Length: 126
Image (cartoon, rainbow, N blue to C red; front, side, top):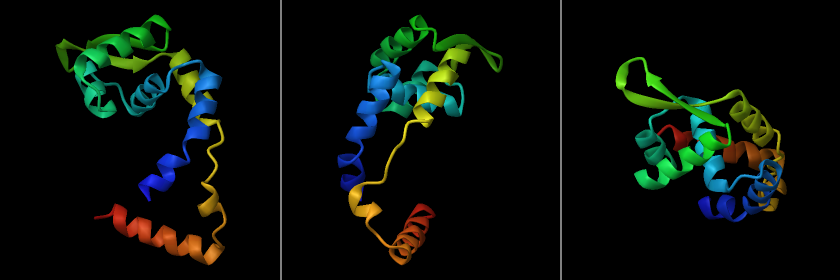
């Protein structure tokens, strides 16, 4: 299943990169920050990259005006990275980019899709 999805995400990824002008590695980070602010260490863990790469990526996103670092109110020694208004606009652009189902899934009938949904829900709960 993963192979099917991954192999068919290239078109969407290319569209998002073209529309935003950002490398996909930066898009992955923005999408994670859209859920909640994070420290750079948390960004690295969420994006499955090392800490130096996360620092470079956050610096780039900050330079582009898409994120800001602010002192964590819960821990003044830490900085939280969060989206700016421009960053939220980029997320809206990403979310508005059509992400069609892979052809093999689009060809399934209603009954098959419902069966697949039930199976995936079962897998997701375990």
